[in-house]
Image (cartoon, rainbow, N blue to C red; front, side):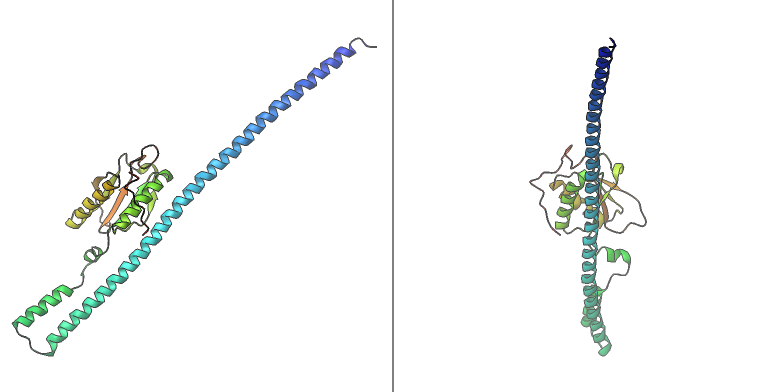
Length: 242
């Protein structure tokens, strides 16, 4: 019998035990990596779902804005038709028979009161102010939606909420593009309403020849309305369905 046989057998057993131990550790490492990959995939899927919800919310608000705008235009058309009808009736009186000085004065007043807007700017001022909201990411969406609903409850049109990423300023501001009395009145009222709901806005007048009259933009500052810096008073936020 070979005297080295028992020693060789022991070495083989030790080698097999080492291989078994390495395989065990390898399986554990593989399991950890597998679980980690699943967790990462779930995290990415959750972020994608949040982003899509924000996108759908923006589209839904845009659709509501169009519906409100169409309804407003319909009402304006009906008002204009009634004004034109009244004006024509007044002119028919003038054509049918001579009128005295008092009647001429009354006719002039009627025509002035029923004159329809003669340019795009005048017509634009007859529709509600329009406010767009800009946010830095999905984490501000809930707060922005509360502000949008509160503004809608005050009669403003809020077409949608746009995610502009890192373009947002450090502090929230209200941007506008004209300096007329109507615009400045709107700016003061928007600031006052937002302050009531816990959002403080600085003002920023910009120049644009293509901006629609009564067009405003609220840019939420970084971290505003998030868990990192919640600036909204939940008692004052009143959800309103437009």
